Image (cartoon, rainbow, N blue to C red; front, top):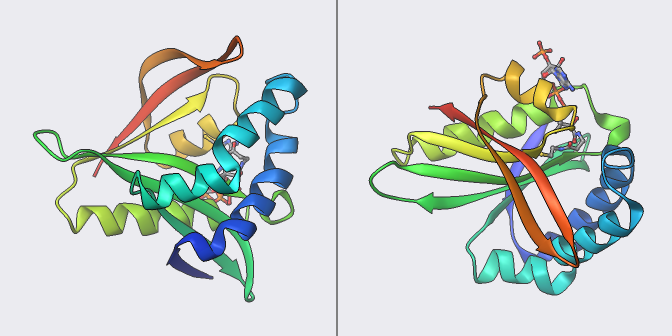
Length: 165
Ligand SMILES: CC(C)(COP(=O)(O)OP(=O)(O)OC[C@H]1O[C@@H](n2cnc3c(N)ncnc32)[C@H](O)[C@@H]1OP(=O)(O)O)[C@@H](O)C(=O)NCCC(=O)NCCS
């Protein structure tokens, strides 16, 4: 498996993996209206360009046999005093899940940020998402609950999870 840092040139690949992954991951958790709304808000070309070029989100791509199968993004939420980094996204093509791709991407990120002296990696996950089991397995624990309004009357009903590096 190869994991690389990528920029705006990879937006079409990120959009493709997001589309096929979200349809399955969130079909029983949120309505189709909310799914379409959130995908557009977070994965339109304009939004992804803004995340990368304005907000400083770092995206990575995982390739298996030279085929892109997963992506993740993260950035510095606070540099002082807590040295905390936020994991914004992590998605693996449904046909390629349970092969160690997600774990390898998280290990790549934790390795990358711990070199910079970062102390915590934090993320939000829907309270009904099976990915909670994945995060638990990797050593994350739940530190808070958040209901975040995202417009159009929709909410993200999340846990905040954290791991110490
Ligand atoms: C969650 C996700 C990123 C995990 O990636 P993955 O490549 O499928 O997971 P891995 O194969 O790397 O699994 C790593 C370990 O976690 C375990 N694991 C994976 N998913 C799990 C789950 N739902 N519950 C419990 N354990 C799980 C695996 O068994 C494996 O354990 P091991 O190291 O002892 O073998 C991926 O399944 C995914 O994209 N899911 C849908 C989208 C999503 O919900 N993303 C998170 C948004 S917050």
